[in-house]
Amino acid sequence: MSEVKQAGFKGTVYWICIVASLGGLLFGLDQGFIANALPTVDKVYGLNIFQGEGFSGIFLWGAAIGAFIAGFAGRFLGRKKSLVLAGALFAAMSIVSACLPAYEILYWARFLLGVGAGMASFVVPLYLAETAPASIRGSMGTLFQLMITVGILLISVTNVIFISLISSHTERLPLMFIVIVIFAVLMLVGAIFLPESPRWFMLRGKKDKAINALKKVLNSQEEVDLEIKEMEEIISSSAKTGSIFTGPFIKVLFVGMFMMVFQQLVGINAMIYYAPMILGYGGIVGIIGMLTVPIFNLAFTFPAIWLVEKWGRKKLLYVGSIIMFITLISGACAFLATGGQTDASLISSGTKVVLLISVIIYIFGFAFSWGPVAWLICSEIFPIQGREVGMTITTIINWLFAGIVVSFALTVIALYGPATLFFIFAVGCILSMVYLYFWVPETRGATLEEIEMNLKNGKKMKDLGKVE
Ligand code: BGC
Image: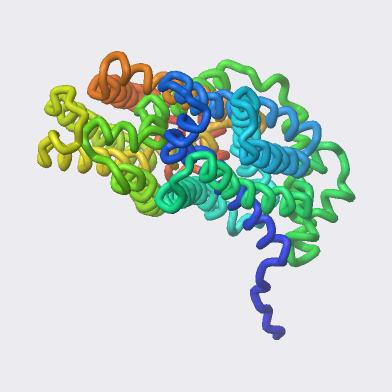
């Protein structure tokens, strides 16, 4: 009997993993940039609080448009070319920003950086799902999420280093952008050498090219033949189905869209973008104000990786909403206790401790639940023919609502104070639980085919994951 050794992965597979990680990392670098760099941008360009908020938010509006463009680019240009395009936008626009151009140009460069991030947020997971060998697809999805939080932390730390080493605002701002340039160029070069997705070739009727692409990632001809057969079956069965916009699909689309609406209305991006400023209102300044949120956001993403299978999705989401609700209320009370005082030395240490602990536990509440689980559920609930459309639309909604939160958070603080902002997000947490109770299915343990069958059989949305 011949001993069959489990062959390792081909070099291309590692390449795919690295480029996909860079996609997530860049997403995070741009998301996390504002927190510690905004005061420097404000000084260099003489921005007031509302202009600073506009500069922060324009990235997210760009990302919503980028996710929309990616839906078409991914289909017509191909997954790989869309990744190259996203990488090129990241690289070119971060280089333009590092040159400290006129404010209007910087503003639109940030918009186009957002377009790149929006494209990457859609194309990277899709490309991975279609190209990475089945045995590592799940962990690759988690890796993408994790790399976002790594990116947020990395840029927060490098920005703190520049702030402490370089006192001149105009000298330090280009360096802050150059960190993004380095990773953007790496991603661009990496993406150029990726193979195109075999599934995209098949969808375009190019079977030979699909076989060649599969040979680059799979180890044996048997595996290649099997994948080709499975793809042919799926494509011919979807060709027989008519329009995907049927009643059940529209319903499930709404479940996915509201998943993303609530992932944002609990307020996470106000914290990711403006934590140093928000904590500053409660007297917490300096390095603690600048690094607390990104450090805990990364650390608390790890528990989700195993809890999501152990507890199930819905329980995690409920617990996350409850934790965020309680901590937003305690944080708001801490702000009220300051009586509007913003001089750190005049705010009692008890108030500061309550606020800091509230924010840390709030971040825990998000990072171990709604952060990864909202994306996971949106990748599970759609029937195969509608998955691409469903995920494009839910991704756009995610960015749009992130844009709304980031574009109005500072205005709410300026007009009504930070406690009001926290109360608004607390209401978001309550509404999220109502939505969970009535509409969200528990998908743990159900296969994608079982979920699809339940949908076709007209089961209630909250029962889609139930398997008899
Ligand atoms: C959200 C982002 C957020 C990030 C924070 C993601 O799941 O979609 O809007 O900035 O988590 O880690």
